[in-house]
Amino acid sequence: MNINIIPLQTHGDDRGNLVSLEETNNIPFSIKRVYYMYDTRNDTRRGFHAHKKLKQLVIALKGTCRFVLDDGKERVEVVLDNPAQGLLLDSLIWREMYDFSDDCVLVVLADSHYDENDYIRNYDDFLKLVSEL
Ligand code: TYD
Image (cartoon, rainbow, N blue to C red; front, side):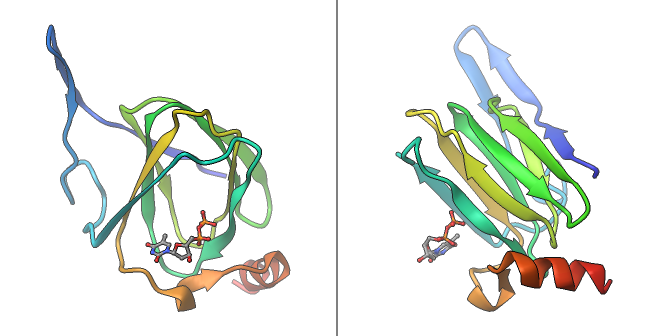
């Protein structure tokens, strides 16, 4: 499976670091929604879904967490621990998130508004859908 981690240019100087996110420039889609997760319990797993159409970019602004990404053929583990890297999540990728550090803040940029109809929340349904492609 192709894991797409986008390096985000950091404007750093002796005051600290700054990263800018611009649609169609360093973010490969138009940004319709931004959401973030914080204070996630470290004994919890989130996600457990895929999207029919939605594309997203996830950045660990602070702390670390692990992703399992699954395209129906292969499962890959990815650690997010760098605020200067964005993990691109394409449509039809099953994702689970776990091992959140106490300070973990994940920000997600999405190319559409929230739409429950775009979710595939049952893993068997997901496998069936990708096997029919
Ligand atoms: P949920 O899908 O359970 O999150 P996860 O992907 O981590 O399992 O979302 C949690 C709640 O937040 C759920 O009630 C739906 C709501 N929600 C929104 O209202 N807007 C959003 O953009 C997102 C991502 C979730």
